[in-house]
Length: 590
Image 1 (cartoon, rainbow, N blue to C red):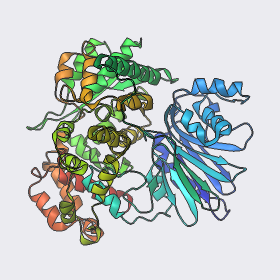
Image 2 (image 1 turned 90 degrees about the vertical axis):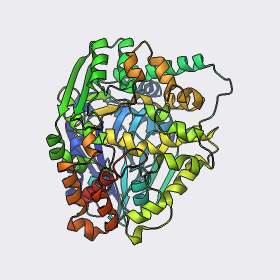
Image 3 (image 1 turned 90 degrees about the horizontal axis):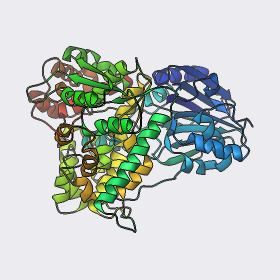
Image 4 (image 1 turned 45 degrees about the horizontal axis):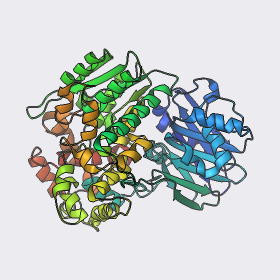
């Protein structure tokens, strides 16, 4: 797990070292253990290392193969790298390290672009082919690891976050109207390849990207999720067993493949609690667990310690919990938003940031429960969607979309009132031949698109801001493929996540299984009062906000007049959604 960056100039000239330095500084927090840069003609590869596998200097990046034809920078973890290493050695490939990075390098030398199909894990990497004078980039199937790029007239720049690209001073920073529509209507999800800014794009999950030295670029997909029933139907009990075994393998793999200890972020909900149970069942002793809590509001509790404590006690974990007062949250809010690769509205982004700061003092790697709700139908809106009628859009949008198109047009100034891009995106993804039913299509859309730029992005950003690697067992691509073929009614049982609840019964306390869905809540960002209200009001009433001209000021005035009455269908504060967008732009664009 690391931060990467690099560039390829199209005029044959070397990349400016000042630009490389600026990019490096913007990904530095992702990799505090080592730094490396390599310049060769028109290409520059840079890396900030978080040492997890092969802690020796042999794991230094950028890394070169023994022929010196290929050079790589890599962010992520390949869980099947020991097996691939043995295959490649048998084929005559030589290794100078015991790292998964070198396995990717030799896999590319051996199998070319097909190497990604053999990789089991989370990854974003770039490989320079000296002979071909070509740059090859790839991102993992589930989009767990980020990979942003800017294709300018003079060159191609890439990095683990947009901040590194903005540091070049070469990116078009105008607002992308399509990205803005998704940001405000789709719970801040802007699916790849777009971002909020016209000049910055991101590699799609499960895609290759090739850029040649003349500036030509091509991309292609190497994997697609199919949500259809298997040829041989399984009973409900057989599904339970198959899912349990696949999840156990995923959890164990993410514990075993590391040369450092692995902890668990324990929210007190079903998903992370089940990870603890399965780790214990697989033989891991003295599991390190971590929880965070915030001040209560009258409408909502700010911690779930009563549930996380019960799990920690049941498995005798080495448990640490942190209570964060509101005055610390408001004081840290600016740095949290600055650390966001893109504006993120999920309130647990703040929780993950502050928790990761504490956790990183004792471990470098944690497992987290992200993905379980999308893969196994755990959210409250799935049931109403399933029970509704009409077109796919009519069944989906009323339960998920934050702002219908008419409200979006009321939210923004006239220059951004274009087409209903969000409805078009929903229709494109739900009207697919890759799914057997409407609910299969919804879950497929969630897993392949919506989750990538919401909870998965939040967890990567907030943990890596402190040099902490987060592994997500529920998003193992083989587990996801299996779950996608499972009948939706089994997943929707017991008010959602029926399969997981049945697997968890007897493994974790019933109170954790039967409670309402849990997460890391920060009530002060939902019920906006006091200093939090003032922060958002100052942001949205600032001169820079008015000069930027994104928001219709009369709409903002209505939100500010009644800050606790304007909620999205997913129970998010529309005032917070607006403020975090504007504040992020102030910090990164000006």
